[in-house]
Each structure stands twice: as C-alpha cells, then as structure tokens.
Length: 449
Ligand code: 4AD
Ligand code: MG
Image 1 (cartoon, helix red, strand yellow):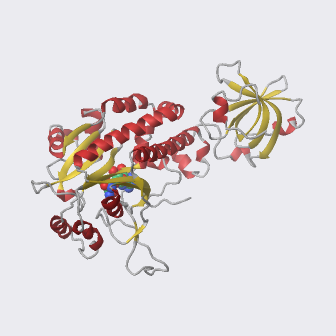
Image 2: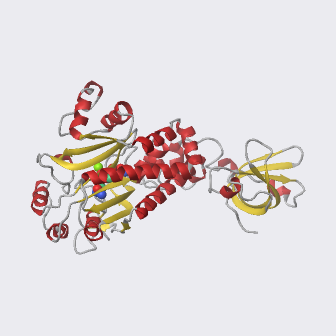
Image 3: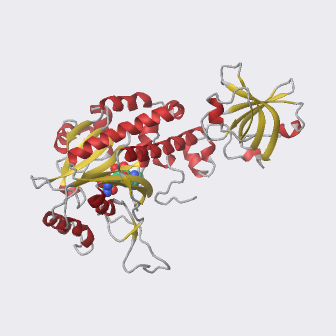
C-alpha cells in the first residue's frame, strides 16, 4: 500500500481499491449511529476527501479527539459516493493519528472564514486555507506554463545574477549589500532590480533567451501592488523590434491563460466564488481576442477627454497612475491594453529612441484592476545614441562598459520585456492585494516570516 494524492482519488483513479492517504483534518462530524465523518485535505487539490470511520475501528477513541488541523494517515476502500456533495469517499480500515493540534480552541486557522489581513499575520499557516492554497497552486501552474512556452519556442533559460553592481531601471531603489557595514566586493553592490542587462549579452549570442527569478526593489510605495521582492520573467530576443515582442507578449499571455484554465479550473472557480469576479470570461475573452494596442499619444487623448474624473491631471509627458490605467482597462476598453511609444523622459536609459527624438520604443501592458503587468522595449543598439541617453540620465559611461561593448561588437536590434509574476497572478485570480499571491511577502516595514 503506497500513499495516494487526493487529487487522483477525486479524479476517479482508485475506485474500489484499498489505498492510503495522508493529510490534515478540515472537519469531523460524528453521527449517533457510531460513525464519524472526517474531511481531509492534502493540498494536491482544493477538494477534501470524505472518510467514513465506524466505531468498530480499534482506536475509535483517538478519532474522537481529532480537530481541524490534525494530521492523519488513513487506509481504506475508495467507493463511489451516494451523496451529491462528492464523487468518491473512503471507508477507513485503519487510521493513524500523526500530529494532534495542541490547543484546538486557539488554532489560528479554524474552519471559519478569516480575513486576508488576518491571514497575512499567520503566513506560515495560511496556506492551509482554501483561498491561499488555490492561489499557490495557480501560481505554480503559471510558472510551469511560462517555462513550457519558452521551451516550445526555443528560448534558452539563463540564470542571471541576483547580486549586481549596476542599476537597470535607474530609479535608485536598489538594496545595498554590505557585510559588517563594509563593502564585500571590489565595488558597491546591490540586489538586482532586473536581470535584463545581463540577459541582453546572452541574447546577443544565443538569439532567444530568458531569465526568470526574484528581483528586489526598495520601493517606498507601500501599496497593494508593490513588493520589495517579487518574481519576474524576462525574455530577450536578438534581431527583433518592438512589433515582434508585441506579438510575442500577446501569444505568451494567451498560452498562460489557456494553460491555467485547462489545468487549474477548480482553483480558478474557487477564486471566482471568493472574489465575485467573472475571471473565466475575462481570460477567455483575452484568449479569443488578444489585447487592445494603442500609442501613448492616443492614451493621453482618451484620458484628457475624461480629465474631470481624475485626481492627478494628465498632460503629455506624464506617467500614468492607477486611476488612469483603470479607466483605460476597466471602463474604456474593458480589456488588457498594450501602450507603446512613451516619452523618453519617463522611461529607462536603454530604450531605443524613436525618430521623433521625443519618444522611445517602449511597451507597457496594463490590465483591469491591476495596472501595469508588463514593461518592455526595443533596446538602443546604436552606441552613439546609447551614450547620449546614459549622459542624459546621469549614468556613468564607465560603469556600463560591458553593456556598451555589446554595441561595439556585432550589434543587433534586440528587444525584450519583463512580466511581473505577482501582478499577473493578481489578474488571473482576481485578488486585490499582491501580498496574498506570494508565499511570504516582503514589503516596506514588513518582514515577519
Ligand atoms: O517595468 P519594469 O520596471 O521593467 C523592467 O524591469 C525591465 N527591465 C523588464 C525588461 O524589459 N526585461 O518591471 C517589469 C514588471 C512591471 O511591469 C510589473 O509588473 C512588475 O515588474 N513590477 C513589480 N511587481 C511587484 N512589485 C513591484 N515593486 C514591482 N515593480 C515592477
Ligand atoms: Mg515599468
């Protein structure tokens, strides 16, 4: 007898077989007829397995002590359930109590519905709730989908360093690395905000690459969409312009959404119920229709027509805030929107300058409720133009010597983008706070686990 996942039992693979499962008790109910019903979950899926235990079992007394959160190992026969509530149930022949809950009345994750704010305070146990476990399974499926997509499109995964000496985005919001208050390397170093600069050097040899890892930003903005540590996937392609990556982004999002709907529909359905949003229609709409694509100039025109409704006034040259993004996605287009060709002054130094000398070949993808989920661009591959940008942004040409080398030795047009994984998961699950879609969130003034 070996241990079976509840997911496979629920899928009907073990009917009429004697098997063993392990999990944590969700609920226990005892009938007057000397039968107990345990509902147990092992995290393999949202469903619980109902276990029927007769008082003829030799340790029935121990079973009567089981409360929510206890861990058990049960063996028994799987049968088709006569009840509508579940398809399969187990008739226990033996049950081993592995771990009791020492103080059941103070167990932090009782069966009642807890607020997400409360659950963040017990992040080490919140994974035992339906909502957080659903999100974490969806999160895993999103990561798998991305690797699958990249693999089938011949991208090579490059692991870029987490410790860096240069800034990618130029916000000066990097975490310093010090040991006993001293510099450890030969120069100042930081936790990276993006693997992009390193991945560009690999794109300029392997053509199609991506980096996928955690990135770090000492963000002062303590909002429901900002983390100090988050995950980003950054594809980078040589011999590719902005149009090429617009297409790639759209295909990649369609693939991820389809994959998640296909593999995790029960968890998505739970999120629909939990958040009251029609997530499945929203994802299917995108799969069928793709995104709306507009220029920054067009976005400004649309927003100006509605200016009375915004707190922050909109003029050409300004960056969008969430209220502007939400107007475009939720109200105006009712869809994910790709916005391209932003003013150079609000974008990073590496973006390719357009012939108007005012805008850069940038793309931001914004989504309903979440705002920006993707940022990318065609890269400036012309050394003289890159140097002008570095100077304009007060960045030291010396520090970027190796990045400039790529423009000296067989330079090519190349483009890439970064998807913020937690923002994408917010969109897919309809959750509101980014702290609820990462196992252990890190944000300003908040590192408890
Ligand atoms: O737009 P960003 O800053 O772009 C880059 O870092 C580029 N180097 C990517 C590239 O071209 N290879 O960040 C990319 C995405 C954003 O669109 C957003 O989804 C997410 O990362 N993001 C954050 N997510 C959570 N917390 C934060 N503090 C975030 N900052 C950015
Ligand atoms: Mg951005």
